Length: 249
Image (cartoon, rainbow, N blue to C red; front, side, top):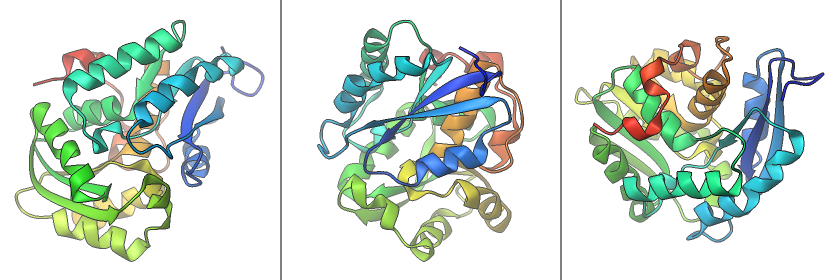
């Protein structure tokens, strides 16, 4: 609930223990009057990240938040629309009295918001892990003609990817077949790069960390344009994009 340092609302952010990028990114994006409260979960078990989130999310009730953002891109693993539905239900069961949003749902809503059809997909993980992300967004009605995998072996190493490799991945997917570039895997730490990427590449970039934060704020009723994170973070969230269960084309 709103408090002294968050008169416009308190946002609980679920961030991996092994991620040092996302907390400062959220602080850079934070509008005046919003309080960011960070809670951590363990991603060392590569095959049970969603379970770790569900186990950790009850701690977020400690700050009486108006919204909880689950920041991780679970679609980078062996994931499906049905699993996302079950994941939402499990999160709600674990924390029943507080609104919850996920980065994956935020990205789908943002892609619809900007009218995306043909995606260039950038993911930090290996092709074996990341092909799931392509399938997930294809299942939501988007075509994904271009992909770039950064071949990081474990999630805790994503924060170490050099900037030149990140830029090369975005260059690779920026073809004529693509109208929008989607980045999943928020640990890359590129929220402050997105605006420059959009100018350089000539396309809108939907990046999971910035987009998740934008979506959580809009669902809280905070419509302030953000100063970084790309074009999407200056947009309002249309009413018809507020229910993730209705965003499968």
